[in-house]
Amino acid sequence: MMTDPIADMLTRIRNALRIEAPFVDIPSSREKVGIAQVLKEEGYIHNYQVGRIRPDEQTGRHEFFPGEKDPKPILRIFLKYGDQGEQVIRSIERVSKPGRRVYRGYRELKPVLNGLGIAVLSTSRGIMSDRQARRRHLGGEVLCEVW
Image (cartoon, rainbow, N blue to C red; front, side, top):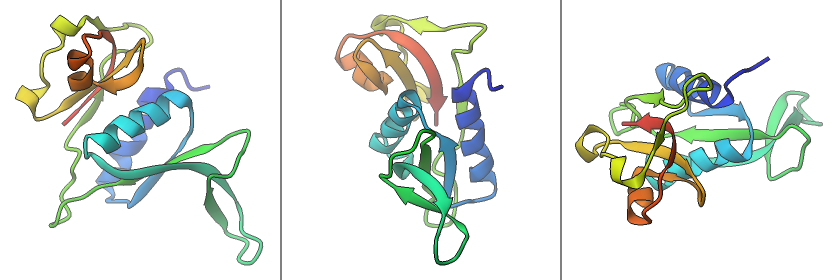
């Protein structure tokens, strides 16, 4: 049983970056899709898709089918690398954990790494970056930090 699905998502992304994988598959949820959307908007990943994995009729191999409905959907995140193959995401860390939730008001949201990184927050208006939350005067739970 998984106790922290977001920590699992971040660990899968870190592991995929270490082996320079083009994408990573993660069990999907609305919260994880929201985090992927923020990472895409901020330029840390190329794209993401929600779909299902099933055997292909012709090859028999398991293939990803984007957009197909499934009781257990898969979130596929397409990772981004620089021109020389360097990782765009240098670090991605969980801040708020099941045992210790971390909440910040918009006045307490300081730039991550002097503005070189972002924090991903869960607010009353959805999941967004710390920059968006400060602009909208919203606080919330700090899910993770990325730089």
